[in-house]
Amino acid sequence: MTEFIRKRVKNVRNDVLSGITVALALVPEAVAFAFVAGVDPMVGLYAAFMIGLITSIFGGRPGMISGATGALAVVMVSLVSEGNAMGVEGENLGLYYLFLTVILMGIIQFLAGVLKLGKFVRLIPHPVMMGFVNGLAIVIFLSQLGMFKTNIGGEKMWLQGQSLWLMVGFVSLTMLIMWGLPKIKATKKLPEALIAILVVSGIVIFSNLDVATVGSFIRDGGGSGLKGNFPTPVLETFSKIPLNLETFKFIFPYALILAAIGLIESLMTLNLIDELTETRGNTNRECMAQGGANIITGLFGGMGGCAMIGQSIINIKGGGRGRLSGIVAAIMLLMFILFASSYIEQVPIAALVGVMFMVVIGTFAWSSFRIINKIPVADVIVLILVSGLTVIFDLAIAVITGVIVSALVFSWENAKRIRARKRIKEDGTKVYEIWGPLFFGSISAFNEKFDVKNDPKNVEIDFVESRISDHSALEAIYNLVEKYETAGKKITLKHLSTDCKRLLYKASPKFHQVIEEAIDDPRYHLAANPEKFEKSLSEYKF
Image (cartoon, rainbow, N blue to C red):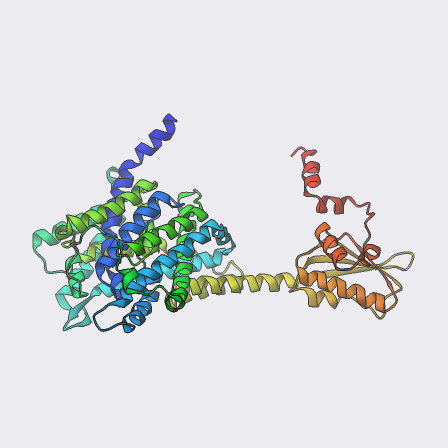
């Protein structure tokens, strides 16, 4: 117990400092995603606070940061636009439809956790995971390029001249500090991202340089500033939006898409953090926490959210490992909004862009270039496909496509592994020894192995080296028996698994005469009875 407490107390400093760094990085991200969704910046900031706080306390992955994300914002923009069109000009019905959709999204995510659907994330292949990481790194990088633009006459234009050089210079300085600080032995325990932000901010403020800051970024986007109040329930949502079947039909498709994107991004980020920290999170608990957080966020006027891979990596790299880091990040973000808005608005955008560029470098799986010639071509295609779809469309489409392609490739490769070794016994019986998995993909090749017309009167099919995987395989066996019996030949099935025999007996009583039960073969008994197999292993000393 003493050792446990010592470890927790030891990391408090890292959790607190890392949480402050994350809070600073959350501000422009939340504001930018709110602009993408077409809502007020405070809607994004409130979401970042509430989602971050609730998931940090109740989530399944300590150290993971959640908040408003771009993957969700790009879906929300059409929802808000269509919702606004349903009301009169200036009524902003789209915002209230958004809140209601976020609540429904949270309910779907919470149910996914209750039904323990989070475990299905283990079905995501490694090439899909690498594609997801690379794609998100590219998306984060591209999103930061927008910070190199300025608002001139209501139109976004690229920075030029001195403004551009100052931006590039401070971004480079931030990255240089973050790269060089850990290499100095005396400063290894300092949070390099926070130090870099403070140094660059100090240079800009004391030199009175005219550069883009958090405050100017918000005002250029049409916001009034970072100053806000403590979030309160938005009860007018239920008075402005009719709670009927038509409303449900409108918001449900959006809620389902948002829930899927949010869970996929959160669970894959959880897997990534697991690998970085060599620990294991709880996927089902994370689903419920994300769902509960979105329900509360929708009630309190937030735009909803999910795990943020960029901020999560900033936190992990900064030493944040416990729930305290996420709690500090959320509370500090609220403190910025309530009490320190004037100071945070002075932080130069260049410092935050530099931090995010370092996140991009740390996120991208550079090893994918090294292994590209060492892994199967199909895996290379999946990796590139998922990366590209993540950038072009969104994470949900990319991951689902990657999983489908990987599953099809796996099925095709296994379908080619079905084999039939043939031999003739002394009594003239022809034996087919089946090797390989028998499932829907290998049925066609399986049927081609048999020569019903020219086979002798007695035929045995031995399944000891084959596994019956699905209903298609059972149907194929049933049809094969029918063909042999129609041809007036006797067929015997040997070494079928217990499950397969049970299903065949249920399908037709005649299988009691076709399937051979009295088998004196230790291989079969060990394969059919895992407990006996384990017991036999225990008899050996390794």
